Amino acid sequence: MDAPLLALAGVTRRFRPDRPPVLEDLSFALAAGEYVAIMGESGVGKSTLLNVIAGLDRPDAGSIRLDGRELTGLDDDALTLLRRRSMGFVFQAFHVLPYLTVARNVGLPLALGGCEPGEAAARVAAMLAAVGLDGSGGRLPRELSGGELQRVAIARALVHRPRLLLADEPTGNLDPRTAGQVLALLKAQIQSYGGGGLLITHSRAAAATADRAYEFDGRGLKALAGA
Image (cartoon, rainbow, N blue to C red; front, top):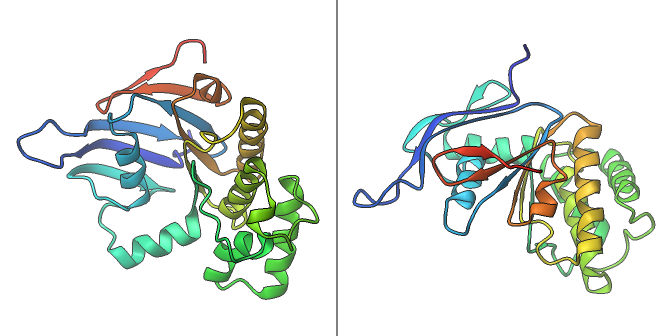
């Protein structure tokens, strides 16, 4: 059996010694090409989970491996480089830069990664076409709808073909029809190049689009019935 793309083993995160841990002895695996959703009430630790996976926060115990590489022992510079090269992020707030065109927003990960300008331009154009924004590269964010802005965010997150995409409530600001389109696009793009995706959501409808869906209580994951 192939090794998982992402593997957590015994991950624990405690912020105060007099309080229960936010994450406790959590184990989880994600295969390449797989898109998994995690649901849970506010405050159970979903954002903490994403932060420790991304290396923005460090667990107190346990192991986190991406493509077989242990992340918990890396220093801050190595984690920054890893995020830049191997991870993509999509959030509920679109986080596009208002003073940059759509094409320049999407191309930011390639610029940070030192991609040659001609190749970067071609990849940005291809990514915009893939998310249904062909011909929109010269527009500014203020000219776009909410659904279009989220497509820009998805294009930016995936243009460098990250091994792992982390999506935190990416459709929370969208109407149901647009949300469905964005989630289908997100899944298709991740799977088109063999990456893996982890979706954090409050929406059962959003969770139902994933290959697997779980409810999360900070200590464990329970398969979500009917998803």
